[in-house]
Amino acid sequence: MKNLIKSTLFLTVLIAGLIAGLTACKDRTTEMITYEANVPVYMPFDEFRASFLKSAPAEISHPGKMYFKDGYLFVNEYGKGIHVIDNTDPSNPEKIAFYEILGNVDMAIKGNVLFADSHIDLLAIDITDVEKPVEIDRIENVDDIRGRARRSSGDGRVLASGEALCGRSAAERDRTQGQEKRAIERNQRCRRQQTTALESTGTVRG
Image 1 (spheres, rainbow, N blue to C red):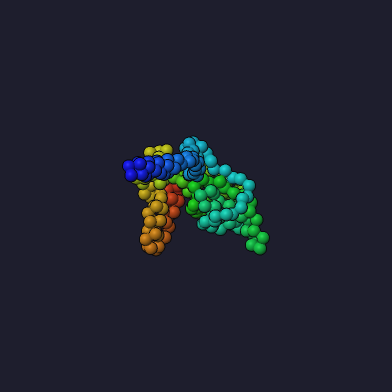
Image 2: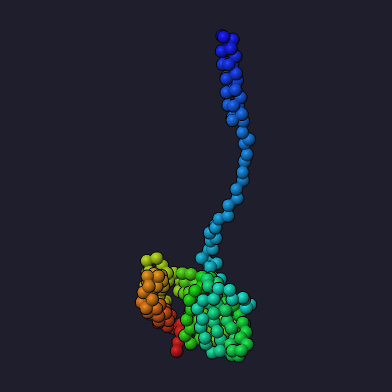
């Protein structure tokens, strides 16, 4: 009887040991996972403010605002610049140039001067000859976070402040809240003030 008990106990311990050994033996594997992430690309201010360029015509892929003047169409390429299209023959429009303006989303024209935003700056570009545009002025930091970016006209006068020049962020907020009329009025007032500010330095005449 004792031998039977010992045999049973031995088998029980043996089986338990085998089970424990089998469950403990697992293959170890290593899995490599590759992630893609957006990494910010920084540009020095000097390089950014020297980036305006007239280049060859480009494909229109993300059009924004459009402007018509003297037979030419100016079409914003969102965030990249402005397409210039000869529309003197509406049945056969011809792209003739692309103005590279980093961060551009808006524009206005007065006389022969094209006003265009470029991220935090406002550019004034002479388009008397649309194929030979010339950057004639730049107001820097018009979207200063405090709205107080200012620039001297050279004789002690203050050209403008961010409050008078931009207003775009507030207008966008109004639009998202459904106050479209107020957003339109704010943008129109902003563009008038931008033009007036540049005229006060003699950049724009007539």
